[in-house]
Amino acid sequence: MVVTWRAAALMGLGVVPVLLLPADGTVLVWSAVVVLAGVADVVLAASPRRVAVQRRVPGSVRLRSEATSELVVRNASGRRLRAVVRDAWGPSAGAGPGRGSTERVRPASGGAGRHHVDLPDGEAARLPTTLVPTRRGDRTAGGVTIRSLGPLGLAGRQVTLPVPGRLRVLPEFASRKHLPSRLARLREMDGRAAVQIRGEGTEFDSLREYVVGDDVRSIDWRATARRREVVVRTWRPERDRRVLIVLDTGRTSAARVGAADSTGAPRLDASIEAALLLAALAGHAGDRVELVAFDRTVRSRVVGAAGPRLMPAMAESLATVEPVLLETDWPGVVAQVRTRMTQRALVVLLTTLDPAAVENGLLPVVDQLARDHTVVVASVADEEVAGLRSGRDTVAEVYDAAAAARGDLERTAVTTMLRRYGADVVEALPDDLAPRLADEYLALKAAGRL
Image (cartoon, rainbow, N blue to C red):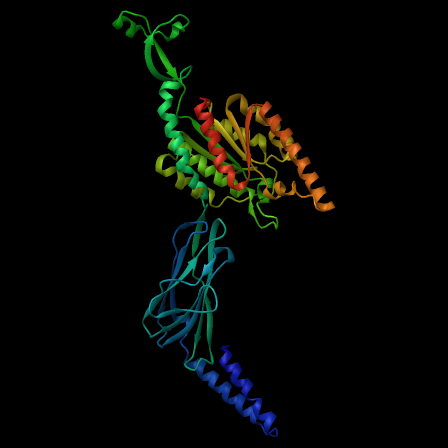
């Protein structure tokens, strides 16, 4: 039995006669009347257990985009259903009042996912709840609570029914705003490629007359016989290469960047944005893109997706990837790369430039990768640390600035060592990492290093 605020108010009114008249049982009589009315209300209320509830949820939605969870409530209780229905979701699902309610549904004024329902027997209503998720991953629905009230609204019955539902929240991919400008540069490069890029390679380009100094192995004897002059083949480097994106999901990827109050997004989220933009750009260039999320084991993998299937596969695979509080097994990363890449490729390591983590993990193995592949190490810089450098007003700020400067020197030293071992390094703030990595890819492409 559920007692409403109306019943509590009526019970409180029973105290008034005591203050005005001698105690003669007025309070007891008044309370008994209210209790009897409440019992009658419970008896006349529709049974919430005889209400059929179905849930309709879209399969997936982008982070911070709107989705709608819709409950279909059918009254099969044999009585008129006057109820409050609550569609329960976790806080990160961002549940809010529904839009586009049917005529028989009036969203409650007090809270997300709550609806007032007034349904005759045998009829149904749709109860929409707007969801604006604030975290990636699978957001699951809780139970549906139905509080059925009697005609007087004094009391009623309540039950929570299990109505399963799951909404997969895909990465936001806010960096896609940088894609059109990078695609324009890519098309410009492709227009110049046939004229400007020549040299050793495996793709045939054209025939030309032999000049002194040409490799005699490039002579095309059939064309020479037809033209009655010595003709050589010219080659160009391959344009469609393999790109492997390695996403570090180890301990350092859990650090939050971009906010002084530790409420910023994890470093992993910025790495995911960079991976998505690079995959979209490389996919448009015709390169074969693969992805592996790894710490001590493979957390996610995208292999064999190309064309229009690439980005949906990337988003679906990265939706549920979360940081793991373990040190990354970098020799295991090398083994993964060697297993997947049997020919020279671009290997992008999205990790951290924290000196301790690099010196003890990445640095000993990066030269092994650089011997066989073009290696790019991309890392997210912490905006809060960058802001500490300018503080000089107090003694504490001076110490913070000194610590930030010392950290910069250590990261610079680590970056120099990585480049000495043959890796290119990209470090940028969370919002700048994705476009900077895309620019690095285009630069390597233009230089024929892929």
